Amino acid sequence: MANTTVRGAFAIHGQNPQSLVETVIRNRIYESAYWKEHCFALTAESLIDRALELKYIGGVYGNQKPTEFLCLLLKLLQIQPEKEILLEYLQADEFKYLRALATMYIRMTFDAVEVYEILEPLLKDFRKLRYRNMGGYSLTHMDEFVDSLLREERVCDIILPRITKREVLEDTGEIGPRKSRLLDAMEGKSEHGSDRSRSRSRSGSPSKSRSRSPSTKKSRSPSRARSRSRSGSEAVSRYVSRSRSRTRSRSGSDVRSRSRSLSPERVNGEERFRSRSRSISPDRMDTAPV
Image (tube, rainbow, N blue to C red):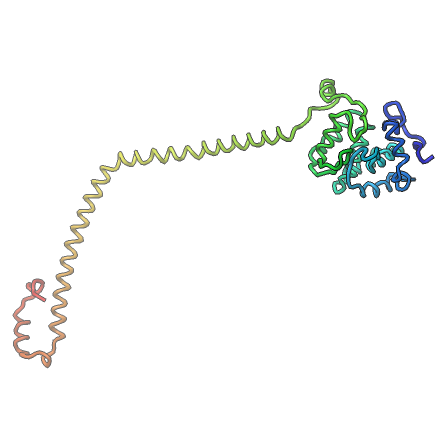
């Protein structure tokens, strides 16, 4: 009773769901200790706890011993959970081995169109997975595992059911063309490159206008230079004339201030000094020696 399929289960690809696993491997799973101890009376809910304990994926290792991953896969085929539950398994991003188990089950039981629509978005998942086989442990990634499910005939030592190729489904119109992330990235780069070229062309136009502006200024510069030279000479002459008069006036005021500051007590010959200061006329004051 423990190895029989649940009552009311639907036939998958015209046969018993457990028959999708080869007879030799299925019998080894039934005889394994993990199946007898941990997979007895599991449900769709309690199976999650066992899937969270998985540490690797794979088929058969050692002396044809099945992995825990294969045991839980056969248990899913036996209890045949609903589609909504399997989609919830896929949405659990934190538990990658639970997602890998759900993808394997979906690939074996769902239709071709649903397989492509559900599994292709998982190609964006680049998390690492441990893979165990006859040679030991190896490292793979989630996107590689999903790609192998879509392309290869045998995964984890199990022959996968045949599905219609994607090219045929596209020709018949059952599924749309696949959107590649690489093409989107290349188109995005080309758009950025065109925007940059446009910005450069726009930024290059003002430089031309700026380069042309000095030529016009040079053509008009001689007349302006002449006018500026004339105005500059007049300003210099005015400044020189004014500066001379100011220096002379300042020199006369200094003489007067000096003559006034001199007291008759400090200078010998007070009468001579006064006579000199009176004899100098105000017209000659500008040319008087200091």
